[in-house]
Length: 386
Image 1 (cartoon, helix red, strand yellow):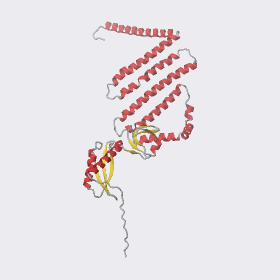
Image 2 (cartoon, one colour):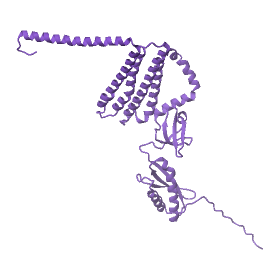
Image 3 (cartoon, rainbow, N blue to C red):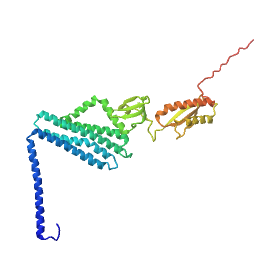
Image 4 (spheres, rainbow, N blue to C red):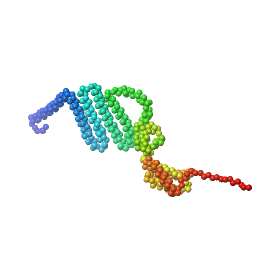
């Protein structure tokens, strides 16, 4: 209120503002009363009232979806990380269907329906809502563990090699929670189920002993991480190939013959595993042993073997190939060529290439490759003549 006005004018302005306030309150109250009267009139026409409530439910769901995807998502896109964008996108459908089915549930209760049909509709609405939310929570959980493991910090609890473990455990927990809430949606008493879980677990333990063994073996494999997806491994039984996936029950390996082998985790847990992709890099050293005759020049043999390895495009230049004189064997001198290849699956092809080149190079350099042989000396006794 302005200063310097006469006292009577101040009193008049105060009373005027008070009447304006009362008038606005009267308009609001009158508007609310009009809406309430209109709703009471609609209730007399059940079908029209039901349709209006359904339309209001759809409109409210659309408004909630617009607020989430139109306003909140706009602020989420301004952040540096993409996790919040995917979070808002995952909550898009659950919020829409939750608001819509909530309005439908209220609308259905206004219509005179048989109790059995009403029970069926309400249970169906709740079940669909639980399923939609379960899918959304599963997506959010997967994105969360991916975002947590991308930092590359070895001190983090969630890392790339432990992602399958948390992924499987999280999905099992989400599935169990979804089943629990679906049962509650149909008014099923789960107390008896929980009470009988102890006896049921014993029965399942005996009936599915192998399955549970694979389950726990899979958890231990994921926790211990002797290998990860994409590694090239060898097993005791002779299986050799790339790890395609690590499941909660089995591990799938793609062999060099392009054949996928599914191996139970319990078998792998009790096997010796050679991880050729382990270590600081995927390079692998290959040893090729060759024998030459004792008449050969040692330096010439070393030079030829080294030149053959360096000339191959499939052999790593760093570390450089090297040759070692190993032993004096029974039939010749034993040398060993040490070379490195980029990937483990190249071993067979590189050994074939290097062996062929050594054979032709030795033949050109007149280097003899010995083979086991025996020299038999026979003496003949000469009888004296008379």
